[in-house]
Amino acid sequence: CYTEMAGEKIRDAINIKLGENSVQMHDISDQSVHQMTQYKYLILGIPTWDFGELQEDWESNWDEMDNISLTDSKVALYGLGDQIGYPEWFQDALGYLWVKVIAQGAKTVGLWPNQGYEFESSAALTQDKSMFVGLPLDDENQLDLTDLHINQWCDQILAEFGLLV
Image 1 (tube, rainbow, N blue to C red):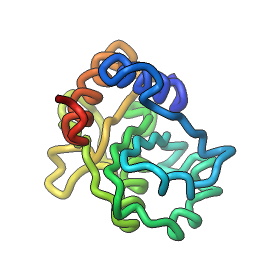
Image 2: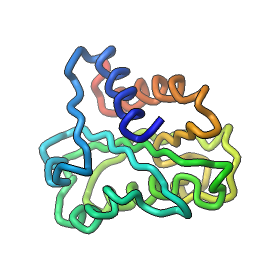
Image 3: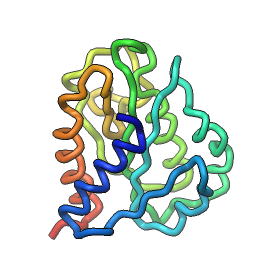
Image 4: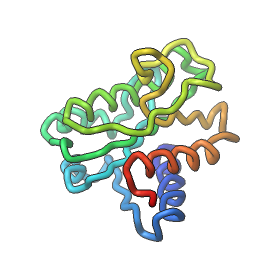
């Protein structure tokens, strides 16, 4: 599945728990990053392209991210990558986005264990390399785990957002 399709699955999983229309989706390709400042809770998705590169829609908005403040936001991140085809750059864009939102003052949630993946390196790992900085999806090689991981991660981030009663 693509980043937008994963986002739709995340939206649907959250709507089941919080009620229909709890999530508003925005596409970085046709909307300003400044809209992010309107929300207390953000879930951002990013694919890693080729050899650890940003996807073009993110790349064209990347510098503009430096002009927003996310100090009042809690942010969860998910990424798409291919651990077998690009094992040296698995989920690198996820790591780049994490650094970017931290620099803008966001509090991040949604760490995911670095278990069950086979890759050489990733810019999306915590300093001790035990966790990813967000949910790493690999639909090329682990499509059968995507829905399970999304549902587990949504429970986790909703709790970390303080939205589950």
